[in-house]
Length: 273
Image (cartoon, rainbow, N blue to C red; front, side):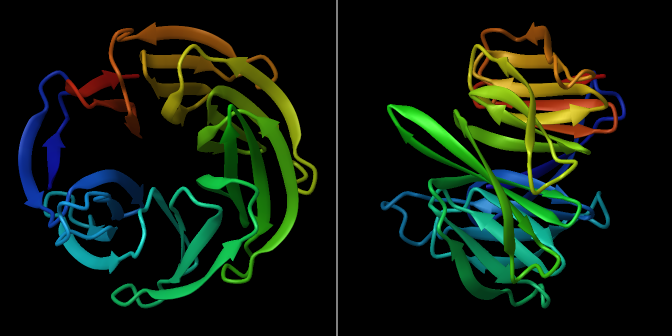
């Protein structure tokens, strides 16, 4: 229930600067510019006073984070993505909740987008296109990447779909490509968003919970440590390295040349690239 910030000018000796108390437990953090979106998720019927929701934090002064808007969601949240005063949310169901955040202090609920073949798992923006990854799993997983024209963010227009096997929780955009990470690493060419084209695929030993891109390198948090993949040739992704092979990593973040990986058991690992 606390947000910590560290001085990592010397990555070998991070210094705790301060902390900020959050009313409810934090399950994930998404950064967009000078705003942090904290996903508050408490699926615990023994704690009825706690609420699921989305807490915004103002990071315009990094040494003094400030709590701003809290949206009390009537559902469990996984990811928040904002675009042109519209927030898109994922909650692991076959619909896409949306909010009008023109007035950030008073988000307004919009009609959710429905009709997905499976549960919405991940979101990303490619230019003015919204990418929505959904998955349906029963014995095996089948997924669909749906691409919407988001020129009018609150009136999404579907332009294409691409179906594939597996389940993916992370979408990484590096134009003209998008790379999906989960049960495998799959790269698609979106030069023509109306007809996504598969480019390359790489099998992975463990499920990828989170991933980031730095130049042509993909760094993935997996059940067996930190996986590094060379994507310099998107049609021939190459597994390069595996560090912390016995450590469960669930989240990963990149700031300039500093990579942070989170382990539920051990805390945070820092790497310089």
